[in-house]
Image (tube, rainbow, N blue to C red; front, side, top):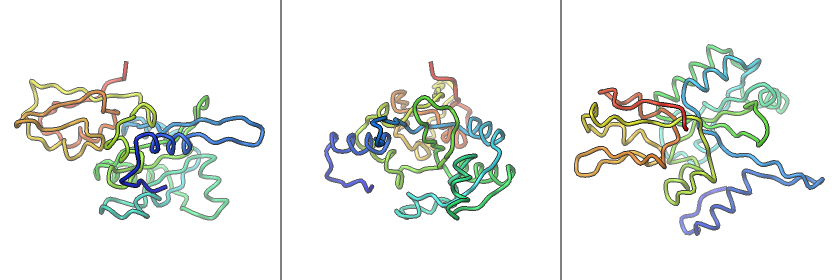
Length: 212
């Protein structure tokens, strides 16, 4: 699905609700939402995976709106088995998977997993950006954060330590960080604890904590 510029808020929400849930013939609805994860969360999941396959990010491969890495989507366990079965992607080692992860983090990409309601295992982790990822684009333009995604972590900003350099603003994919009259402003309701902004902060004024 492409995001049209003329869609209403209601149309966009309906589209993403359709993407996050599907109906099967026995009238059982399987609901899913996208989960935003920080670097450490993804590393822990990768270390517990028995098999990992890397493939291209479908969004960036199609949109081509930035120069960020494309071969960064990771399929785990059953998801990896499925990729091997259909003959796409490449099986990689844990070290290779961690290297892919570090490359995406340095590139300012957000780690996203599709999690089905009532299940725990993560089968797919994509590293996304605001210019190509449809869900993040919609959140930046229209809101509806809680409808589309969830997360375990949230960023905390320490104004006392901040030098208001604004470097982190460009790294934030959700619009949670902005500069107003030369001062860094943090909108907590838009933050999903991806941790991408932390890598750019020279003063250590940003840090992650569990979402309460």
